Picture: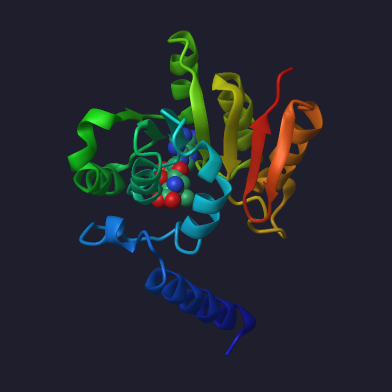
Length: 206
Ligand SMILES: C[S@@+](CC[C@H](N)C(=O)[O-])C[C@H]1O[C@@H](n2cnc3c(N)ncnc32)[C@H](O)[C@@H]1O
């Protein structure tokens, strides 16, 4: 078996174990998913963001796909309204709508590119307590997403970025890390609270 098949098998096993032990599994049960980018993360998220659970009322997610992480934020931040931005291609968009159908009153869906959505939200003077950046993995798009999201984040709020260590052998332009590193170098007001496959930063007063 090749090294990459072995790693794929190992990853599938880890996902299976994480799902079996996930105390949030009930929120995904009976929903329609083709992919799982959340397995193994709910425990880290619920521990790391515990202190802001009750005070978080405005959440933005860039990259929602079928709505799995969106379902988690709605469950975890129980009094929050969630804005979801994605290209929402037809099939994923349909699954997102069906998976989130019960949450209509707490949800805003913006279909289109993140650069357009971030501009729209800025024009509306939107402010968020928590932002999850999990859209495009291209360096320049991630840079735009981080910078645009940061302007919408309140002081004391948290921005979480996925896939920091994604595909380390890709050229720089096709990785997340160079954008996050540049963002961190520019932003002394970003206090690191997590640095692993995901990076989380809390916004300090400027
Ligand atoms: C990894 S998936 C998100 C997974 C989701 N957060 C979850 O955990 O269930 C990345 C998503 O980003 C979206 N995306 C990619 N480029 C984008 C862009 N420029 N603007 C908005 N969304 C984008 C894709 O359509 C895809 O659904």
